[in-house]
Length: 393
Image (tube, one colour):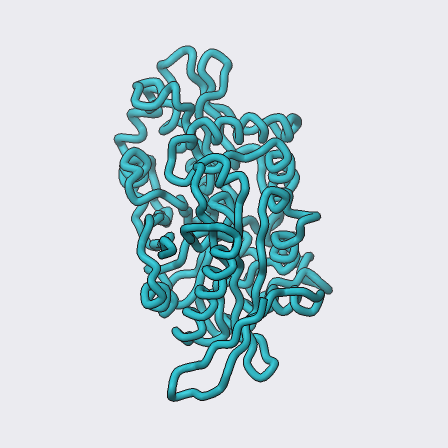
């Protein structure tokens, strides 16, 4: 597949968009964000090894259920943009509609015509694959990086959260895409005299008075089975949420292996009722902060700096990417106590370990229960990520 797109009248040069085919193409696809955003003081270079693993079928087990094409845009032979078109067979089987996805939208410069041409390329590929609608961005699914940053460019992103350019949103809208859903990142900086908010303290006391409910940390000696329990709870807790996709057993095992170096027992708190897990909260150290200044590279000495920051100095920022309560306990007093109890225990553990800032992300704009919990604790919305859609005519 090969597309040629003319730039605006003020720039008569031509750019070419073509699929990734060679090892050099794949490397150019991976390198583009490091070239595009290196002058942005709020961009944080993710670890290149993790980015390479994400687009590798041998490393990212979720790709086994997807048909996807990666594209590069070039001008005069130089790579200036990228995008992916994705057909997720798990999504189609679950929702019984012909929706494809786009992701990995990045350009070297903020050129609306280029963004539009990249989106058009993804649309044409999805149409040729039988899709009737395009949704995104997803890198590659809702369980990975997703959403286009539309507000909050003045602060750096946390681990596994996207960054980008302010111009992308208007370029998407000019290309005929419209808002499908916003997700919000909530932020909190611990003050020097931090104490648990009175309302949360009262909930914690209520948890302590409930004899059959206990909040416990992760058992690192049973890490793999603990992660399976947590992601099983997640699959149940989020099963009715917008665009939800469950984690498969292979994905659970893969995620457990990836997360083990990053977490301590206090990073994850589990609420049990009569010995059965019903709620959880997971914090991850912000790798973006820990790897800042390494340009995504661990060799030759980056690994030593990263290890020191993670294990010796300790992280200063952490993100809550996963939390949940089993659906059987939604809208119940017990469920409220379990959810807030695990949330509070996880936050308290982060503060005790020297973390200065936390982020809860992402939160659906209409998830009133989770928004209320964030506000009760004093977390404030500070970034907005938009999922766009386009129905093909």
